[in-house]
Length: 224
Image (tube, rainbow, N blue to C red; front, top):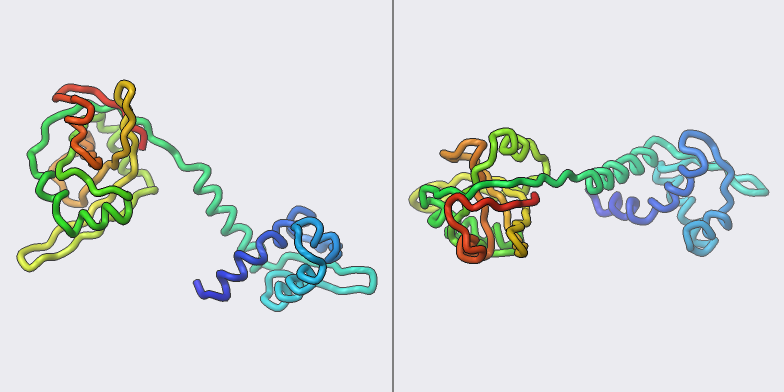
């Protein structure tokens, strides 16, 4: 997106919404004084903005002695639709609630999570540096597949060292609830893994087993 287009979005959206309220696909009579009062700007600013919006193709207008008639053009409607889609995506995010049983892993998580190539990305994208190790939770396969199908994942990119390459993974922010404790965590799904859909690997800023005094067979709840 160019700088000019970004400016258009932030500057004209309130005006487009006000026009759409009165008529999304039709011509509406809208004085600059009325527009200014509706969105809280001066009449002079309203006149300038309407002229700029016409020049950029967001609206068309006909100016008369007693006012003006404006109509949203396709470019303006597309801009409104784009913002609607963005907001709808935010407000319709589905939280997945999971109950899992703690099981022992293979011990490989400690090595991989501790690599600098992953650690920096975790810090930048999850806002914490994880403890070098993963907590393995066994869930039913259906729950595991639902998690795989979630679209709101954060990508952790693979990287290469002089000796070998390391694959990427996707992760989702999570909150663990156990008894009266709540801790920030994340579920990770490496692109290459020996685990099936029924095993979730969980990371957190500290050792979850010690923090929550867990052992194999312990059941915890988690919201993703």
